Image (tube, rainbow, N blue to C red; front, side, top):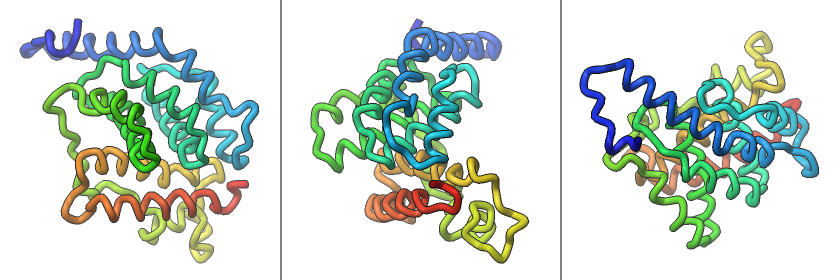
Length: 226
């Protein structure tokens, strides 16, 4: 049953079952194949990126918020490192997932939009055409974070800079090495969907593009990343 045919009414339990059913279907159809694409075996990545990608490759389960979070991190790490063939494969799989407007599907749309953003920059028309319908499914859906207020700004926010090890005057706030890319990857993820909807007055597309370049470059040079 597609979301378009789901009325649900006031039955919250039926809505939750429907959502979980869509996510379970995505796991059955795509979990193993996507895990294989995330597996960093045979490619050279920074040490921490290799660890995070290998962690995601152990299991991709869309009903697990933790698993989807790990996948999103691995996806944007691969994208930042230029591993386009793997990213494209994953995005094509995600494009076929039946979607719902609820929160668990936001990371899926973020990843699709991350791939679309790259495809636009690279002029990959066929990829753009394949992925665009899935990026705005279901029709009428619009995310709530387009203003940019929820971005972590790891290069500008003093507390976050300390957390990722960029401010040695606050050593007690430093995250474990494996967690330091997290704020960068979360912003890159959200910014991809902000870009897809044309940005905002405070975050026009030009600013998003400049910030993407800035975040990807700085993330690769984080203390302990290599």
